[in-house]
Length: 226
Image 1 (spheres, helix red, strand yellow):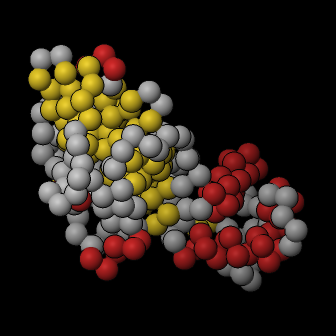
Image 2 (cartoon, helix red, strand yellow):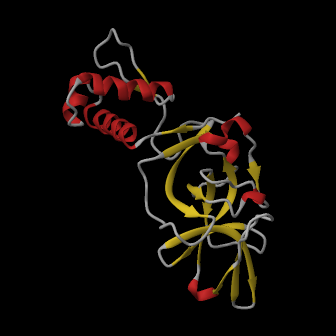
Image 3 (cartoon, one colour):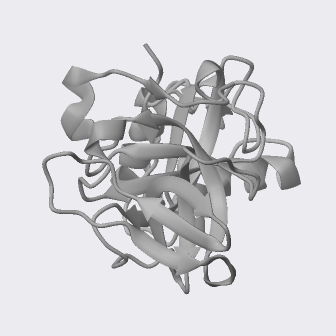
C-alpha cells in the first residue's frame, strides 16, 4: 500500500517556515516563534498544525523539550528513499475543456517511490469528471504525470488547450490530434484540434484514487511505466 499524504496550504506554509528557519538559524523554531512568524493568533493554532504534520509523518517533536521540532523529510521533491513528495499543480477536466490549468502548489501528495519508477520530472494533476473512467481515472483522482512532450498514440496525456487542461487518450493522424475520452457509457466526444493548437504537457504514469475512493484502492499503471 502506498502512502497517501496531502498537505493543506496552512500545513505546507508551516512546514516551509520550519525548513527556512532551520536552514537560517541551525535550530528549530519555538512554538511562539512559529506563531509570530506565521501571524497566528494563538499557540493552539500552531500546535494543531504541528500535530497534523506529525500525523502525516513530516515532522516529530518532544513536547517536553525546547526547540524539539525535527523534520523527517528532506527538501522537495524527494522525501526520503522510500517515498516521493509530488506537487499538485493543477486540475484538469475529464468531461470537457472547462477547468483552467492553474498552479496550486499549496497541496502535495506523498506516494511510494514505486509509483513513479525511474522518472524524475513528476507532478500530480487532479482529475475532474468521469470521461476517462474506463482508463481507471475517476473524478477527484490524482493523476501522476511525467512532464514531457514525447508521447505516442494510445498514451493517456494531459494536454493544454489555450490556458485549459484536459486528460485524454492521445492519437495523432497526419497533422490532426485526437484527444479521446474513455467512457463506454457516457456521451463523450473526442476533442479534435490541429497539432499547432494543442500542447502536450505530460504523459500519465499512474493514478492514485481520491480520498472518496480510497477503500477501493487499485493503482493503475500505463504503457511505458516505469
